[in-house]
Image (cartoon, rainbow, N blue to C red; front, top):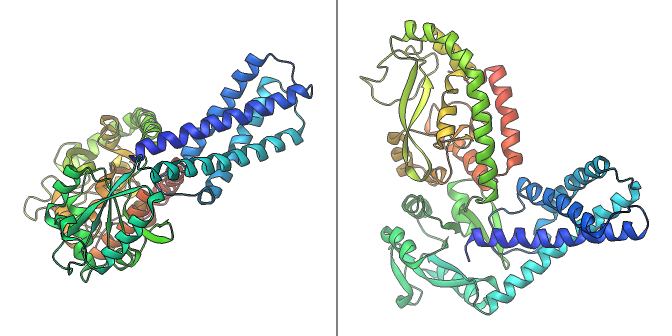
Length: 458
């Protein structure tokens, strides 16, 4: 079963349970004489209120990537969803003319909290029941053939309720072979073709004497594939310093490459991107007209500057900016980072870089679908290839669309050294692991603060 299917099933369970709870609530208040409406109208009101909740659940990350879960895992997400959902419901009651006592809204809150918890419990129990019968299993391959791989595989094979179909092992030549050799699928250099051929949904990286090399080899060769990559925790701890831990029936696993939310999240995110881009370009038109003569006269080049960047799944695209440096600034040096007080930057360029005005034309890229408003910043091919060879997990940034702004941009300064790149990568990986509309909203606010203060300018 793919994550998209699981996400759909989770949402369907929640909708059915929440609708039943809200309708039951209306039935009680109708019986108490607080509303005098037909059952058909009460059913319609129940549906309207119910539709608030999947949007809020998506906003707060209730449908995030995970496979094996218990109801207790979701208490925090449920609390946020139900609290805000009940506030919306209360506002709807007021607009619809219902005159409920405040105590009735408290009853609804408790009822919905219990409903979400029961929905999670029933769903988890149902999925584990299917798993024990071999239905909807998630195809898993273990990277490594040593003792760690063997122990982990035994745990998976004993736990039929975990929902995994252990397809086999992938060797990198670093381990002794402590597993069944007939189950070795091939070397790690062929991992991309193995994942595609065997329809692997999840990879688990086990311990190795060269953890950085193993993690880098797996992530670099799986860019663009719809496969989750996880690891025995200390592997990732050694190479990234920031991980998200999940628990597989008592066995801790760290996300190396999770599967970012699809479906509703990306639909809503894309819709918001289009709205923001259209509004932003409309406002920017006046800014462009004022800056045009200054940029042209000081730079000696065109107003808009076009440059190839690498986007999601390593696809290249042309990114637009307002020119802030003199024309042909890299004709002799080739691609290099801008430095502090860089002499190539023009006076007007320094101003527009300070307040991030040079980034505004990227709203065109957002409309075209090359970029999002929020995401990891796109980089040039030369640097992507260089960092991909030297920095473990760097290519994981390519799992999502690049953004005009991002968590790394508002929490860390411009890149000047490889240490800066490594530090910003931690923020990018955190964002990919925790992508929600709520986090996007916080990044919008932080971005505005950066723009107003000119923080991090070169």
